[in-house]
Length: 479
Image 1 (cartoon, helix red, strand yellow):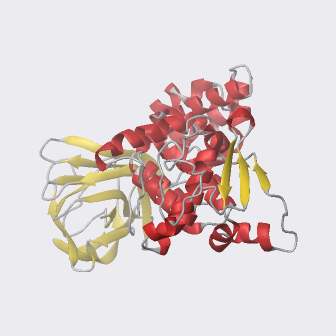
Image 2: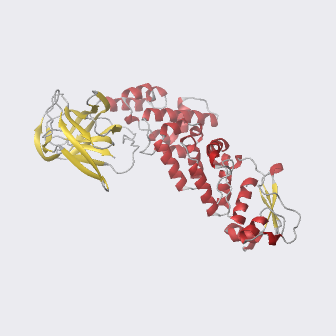
Image 3: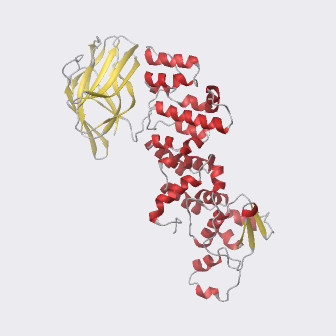
């Protein structure tokens, strides 16, 4: 099957053309924007005697009749105005390949007209559809793939639809992912939409920087903001959302005021995870944007700086651009009480045999019943003395000997066989602690693959945690 108009070494140019030819707001614009292309095979008007003898197969004979007046019994006037084209066809071939055409010609309300107008279809796309019905050949290029997909859906030809989706998938990149996501949602193509979202997850910054990002509709924007798997800091994501709001105000011919930006963002505002920002990022960006109400700014500043933290109407669940299952290891075999705190960090050194991403710790809580703790967690690359991730946060415990999750704002990449130090500085009452610690913890993280942690005591300014006993019993990670 031919699935592209160009040669293999022209794939990059086709991808570029795809971005340009389907630019503009929404799928409807893309559906009508493709330039008209003349049919590859010329329109035959003169009958040819014994032409059948020159064709050795049924496929060749039917392909010869494509866009050919010979034996045709219906014409289509495709497109609008001066750009419309008259295209001959054969009812039997069309009805054999499409239930829609079958109903059009043979159903209870079949048309008797010899000429059928199709003003909402592009001639180039209709010719691509006919070529496929006559010959099983899918001639698809970047300038007409969207209109061909629309036409294949309109006339219920799923095999051609699949070719279009396959073409789009092969040309999917970060800089056109948002454009194709909008088209996939409009045309109800869940497989393509899923691939677009995966691309946005993996290359979030590049996708947001593309021109087509600001052309998406509000529902598509919200579908992306809802994801837990975006690989970008929340402050940069907020900046991209403000750019989209600026573009939407222009589309709606509204002045660029904070109130209008808030209006056009609507439900998207609640999907920005302001609690994931640092207080500095929040102060430098959202707090000064005017898009948030004053009371929201105050509540978020309190959320960053005090404990217990006030309730805010924004999600504080970390975005984790990782695949697979969350896992955790526990380095202690027994729990005891009591462990006190005086402002010094509990520390434990470790290394791992393979690349992982740490997303948080499990910590012990109070022996005195339900309590709130304030805590700073860090991971330091030991040999360089460089902090590579931290979070000032808090957690509530229920007085049991269970561990309680404390998460970083972003995943922290851990390289194999490099020494790191896990730190936790707690403010609160005496807690449980672990004993009978393990120097080596092995977990099978996938069939035939084991992740191995090695633990070492951290000398110096340490609250007492060691390999044998102390705090930081659990490390939560993805492979």
